[in-house]
Amino acid sequence: MATQRRFCRFSRASSTAAFSLSEIPPDGICLSAFLVVRSAEHPARVLWGRLNPEAPWDHLGALDPERVAHWKDRWMLPASHLIYRESPEEAAERIRSELTGLSPRELHGPRVVSDVYAPPRHPTARQHWDLEFIFQTVAREDELRAVPAWSRLEFLDPRSLAPEEVARLHNDVISRAGPEGGAPGASD
Image 1 (tube, helix red, strand yellow):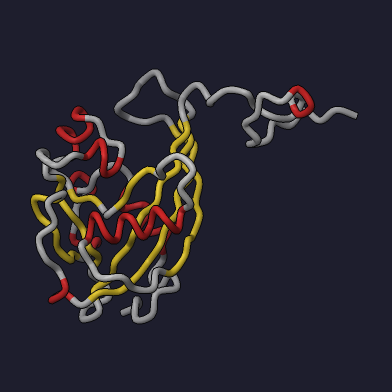
Image 2 (cartoon, rainbow, N blue to C red):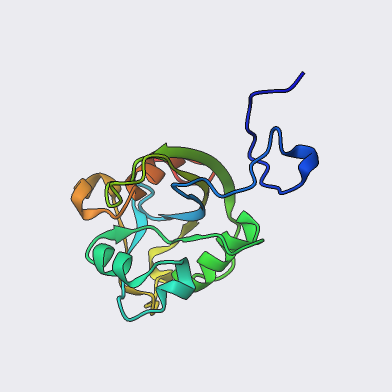
């Protein structure tokens, strides 16, 4: 009995061809890690940054110049696509190091979420697939220092940001992380 399902087993092996995929989905698939850093002093505040357009975002997070230009005036969470064969945990540590400048610390998660949607900036794409790995941690506000990737980096209450001030779907990541999300001291 052959199944009609197509599983997320990307392989060119003929033995699994009936239920696997041998090509990338036409509208793409992204695997990304997000780091939600909550303020130890004000747990409702989360670490947000504004892209520095001079930073090497192709290297830091797989963002091309067009995306950097589009998002540079909006708030983003420290995040990145996974590097090929990188684990979500390794990506979260890389994000902590490269995009927050915070010292090593315990990261909670991941919480894994998935979306299939039509990206507003790409009218021909109808079923882009995102697989997101959300990690959380806590930091004192006095631990923040300038990080070259960002023109601004600060703790802000996401509820104070209008949707048009936030890049992509990063406000959705905050809501999916939840008020506590496994990070100690994360709830008000």
